[in-house]
Length: 164
Image (tube, rainbow, N blue to C red; front, side, top):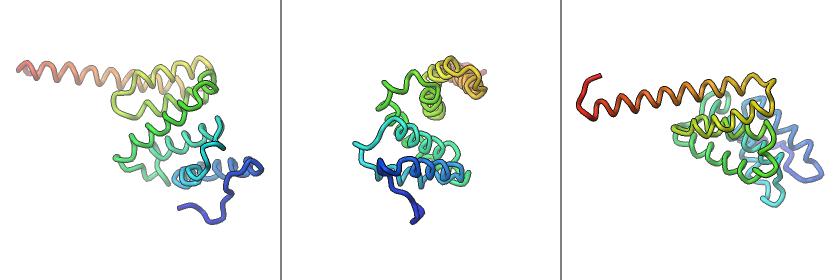
């Protein structure tokens, strides 16, 4: 639940608001971040806001509050929302490593979206070659794609009545 002593977003206190979000992220309080950000009117949201919301949604999904993980039924919904939020700032973000990183993470976890994740991870690596996380995501996506391809071939063999 949201701390009762929080800084609601206004253009005058934007720095304090984002500092608060960073603290909550560092403390694995992703739900607090999401709840507070959901209260901000759409006309006050910008690229920085979209990035922060996508980060909170992804961290909630992947890590969960206090590393408890998110319930499975909420995972894909939160990741799809992160993609939607990032798509709204595509024009400003697509040339930035951080935006491509968020898109890669958002697509990496829903089943069957590895090709999209790989696309964004490659762009992230291109824009920020010093970041060691981008090549790791690329490797993970390729490994998952290979695993899925093997599963499909195995299913096709079984469907034909052959044993593997």
